[in-house]
Length: 372
Image (cartoon, rainbow, N blue to C red; front, side, top):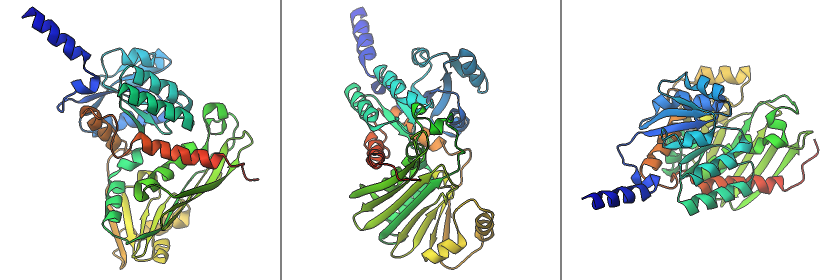
């Protein structure tokens, strides 16, 4: 009996983390980082089914504990390694600065700890490829936190497109921009801090363009540099078979912050702000869409959207998918389900998806910057 007990215990401990999980487990999350995005993630945790927050790590034990004290049953740690080794967590969400993602993700992979990494996954394509290779070799779960893909409105819009709601897609437009005053010490403008408008903002519309349209046949683009040399504004032109796509992002202006999908039977609009859309609207024509639902954050645009938001209008069909919190609970649930099921990737947001967007960023940034 003792021999069989020893054998069973040894066999059980030799199984990977994912193999030991059961479908009844609640995934216990630890957060690496204590900044704004970490606070949003922690705040939305109670809205996610099958997940709970149990730990947080920071370079400062005091900072970690201050963060942890805001939530019941959460422990603070002075390092990621200490949190991973604590036995209190089943998965890690990395919410640290972009430049720390690579090393921290590899640390999680080496520890066979499932990891969700805030976008961008890494500060460059080479690091992302290294992470993918390491994750596959270790059979360890890694996912980029492209949370907008999991919003109910975004998923419903994709379904409607596939069901032919606006017919064959002829044009895709996405603009994501807000003004960030120039400061060479600001992380958005610092090369050493991973500053880059394409990595911080551009990856959203690039990821969502592929989410709706698939793999592009052609990618081209231009960008402008800040005095520090980082990209501050960019425009990309993509082609998906018969569909033309125009994507823009910037730290120099307030943008339209919409996605517009123009089909041969109508037009669909998400946003503003499309990255946290709680509804989508189908219009009979592009002109009607522009009149009833203009983009941007200007007073006139906001008043116009508010005026027409709940009025029944011919040729306008609104589809609301409202939610509590900031919307991060949906990616938390998706990642938790994937970990619980023993998957190495979340099927709707794989590392191939992440790397495809980073390849496009690299391709554009390989061009010399345009003169201001």
